[in-house]
Image 1 (spheres, rainbow, N blue to C red):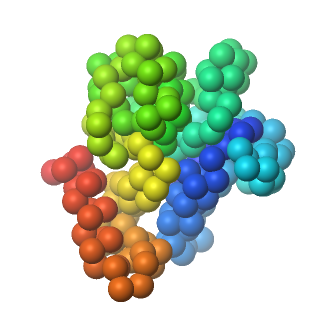
Image 2 (cartoon, one colour; image 1 turned 90 degrees about the vertical axis):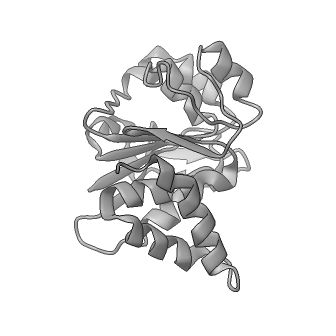
Length: 200
């Protein structure tokens, strides 16, 4: 199982790294979660430089993909060569996007008439791309999910875990990262957000 978190120059640390931390609560040899980048190193919107764990070209073969957000997403979607390196396919992958990552999915034609979530700054761009934007933190239909707001990245990670490992695994991972004294409430809230969008 390879889960690729697409992480571009100017990325938002909360979006990529919270998902990375939650998803890596699964401990088994075939479980791989990577920051999947277009270059060997990418620097965040706040100046944090990280090394790519996988090439962007691996995104097309990953089992699940989360498209992270950042301050340079408009540059990403305006770069045809970069966009061609992301042949994402919800018929064989789980595909999710965080905040401005939703604009990437819209420009790749993966949302169609499906409504989506994004952050308040990116909302007008996603609407201009012809996608209805919901005023909620998480939405999924089939194998495509979107989230809006940095801390909603835990919902995306939980959705990927619930879809691949089951809701017990998602609850366990969330419980580990939840604030002490608030663990049960945190887990219950997150599961309440994603459960309506899980296959019956």
